Image (cartoon, rainbow, N blue to C red; front, side):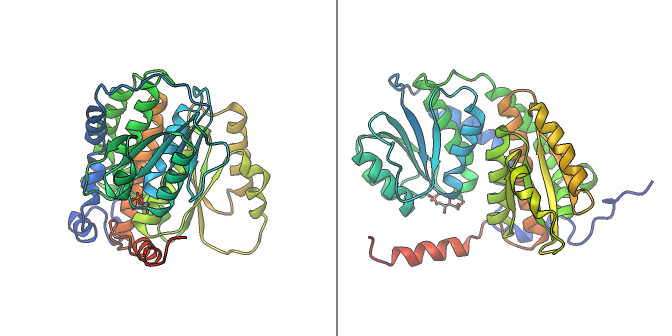
Length: 359
Ligand code: PA5
């Protein structure tokens, strides 16, 4: 029987030496330890308690790897949140923020200027603030606000568990959402998944490696089938952008049936697209039908890959696909020969801006 990935194309993702050579800062190790990082983040939060508080709204302010924890928290908690939760990626905050707002200011470095500016504005509106950072200016100006300390020495996007956990646990502690009981099973599932996705698992048995080969040289269009996966889709995009230095694009059902679907009528081949459908067993029945119609409409125009969540609870399902995307981004980095840790353009822009007088 022939096997498409039995002799993987070069560079071989089964060659651990190649992976080591490209992944100079060992981002694979950071990814492999996600289950332990979640455990550690839970332990760090410990039995911390906050006075009960019923906010009128919740805001997570941050950028890039510091903001995504807010998106994932929103996807996960959406069905039980009694008030709106927004993720703000900007210098300025919306007018609705006031003393009834619960405001998370999140910056791994503590020096991201958009987050500092948004936090200052939130403070001036007397919002109830929780600061999450490893230090920097954010820590210096936190004053009497609750400060949650992140472990130092990690690229922000790999500190995701340490950002996500305290957001969710703080909301639980204040009584905004019920206390979850699916942490343990999520950690266990991730432990199993990492065996399947790790570099030592050969390509024919490794979904992340197979997908990386399939997406290599293509522009991945990531379509999420359910609000539970919106944050995950964004995580896939941002991880592929930063780790593999590659373009990706994200869209969502059923919104894409009201605009994006028209682009498939084009005869111009502006890019070599590949569609990745992020699927979940809990997706709406009408969405299932919509996905089938989409496949019928575009199936002969691009390769379509479907990936499904695993596990039972919502958190297991969210993390199972998030984890696949994280590994995928690293394997793509290897195929593109890009060091996943390096983010020169991001640093260059930050440095240029910091040299300018602040407005
Ligand atoms: O992952 C990254 O390194 C970036 O996306 C950063 O998170 C982003 O630039 C914001 O920096 P910080 O997380 O330090 O606020």
